[in-house]
Amino acid sequence: MFFIIGFLWRLFLASIPQYRVFWDMAAYNELAHAILRGEWAAHCCNHGAGYPLFLSLIYSIFGMDNFFAVRLIQVLLDLVSGLLIAACAKNLFGAKVSRIAFILYMLNPFTSAYTGLLLGETLLVFVVSLIAYLLVSRPAWWHWLLFGALFGYLIQIKIAYVFFIPIVALVTIGLRPKRLVLAFLGFFIVSLYALFANYAVFQKVSVIPPYRTAGGMLYASFSVGRYPELVSDFSTLSDEWRNATDEYYRYVDTKPELMHEYDQKYTEKFKERMKGEWPIFIQNTIQNIIYLWDKRFLLLFIDPFYPKDTQFLRIINISLIALFIIGIARFARKPIVVFSLIYFTALSLVFGLVISESRLTIPAYPIIILWAAYGLERFHRYARFFPKKTVSSE
Image (cartoon, rainbow, N blue to C red):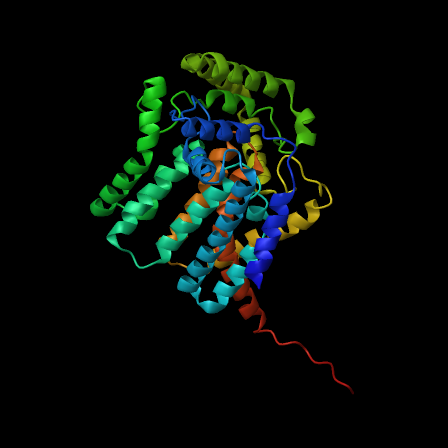
């Protein structure tokens, strides 16, 4: 029954229209078109080929720009993620916690809300769920090959993961030569497309866009505040942030091979500002981390329920995170605990340094729900130790 409810819930959210395909959605869509034209899909700076390859596969089967097919497949993919998390919970904690995890996942609004968008979040959620499932399964040699491929694919979907996924993978897999060799082989295989594409288009040997830069984002982090993820909030951007971002995209559109000039310019500006304003940077980073995990709207870009849905979503979100902390604090099994903690921490710290875009933490919610289910069961078990007081009739 809850599977059907979860399907209908996601189908409802996915059917709420966005008024156009723009920004990251348009970039992914264009790269998917390039693949189907027989061209190499390589972006200079921002986007990997992981999600465009997924889109191009759907378009090749169901027709170009068949957004309904994309949404439906993403709905089904998120349901599969829920089944994987339920299977993880069963392997770790038993059938009761598995049922709780399944119900929580089917009803959760956070991963569900992204199934209707041409964005990589649903695919990231699925890959993270699959990694978690492998970590709680009986290990086989091919698991380590698949681990490497999945960790590599995470980077191809979300390029910024290159700053921390190698560390997450290394800590999770451990310093065992055979495992590391197999994992590296899997990583190499899944990165081959990016290697060939970047060399064919830019004559650069790189598994990520070769002209990516962090200098401008670090500098702009002083002025961005809460990132405007809703179209209605775009007017809140400061002129300083707009200027840095506009200049960045001028390089992207006209002279990406000179991106080092932009990076050097804003890296120096960032260093100068840090000399006297480092407390502000630390304060902004802490604020960014809070904003990253603050879920104040249901649908990205255009949310017809905002702001009426804000308090409801925050209650659900805070409850899940609190139960996640309770659950993971009461359990000491590795390597799933290590993966959960380091992934949660890395998302917060790496993205918190530069931006407060809350969708960046959506891929962590399968892990949060897994441990929240165990935390809820522990909480219920603990509450049973305190029997209700009876009132005497005398």
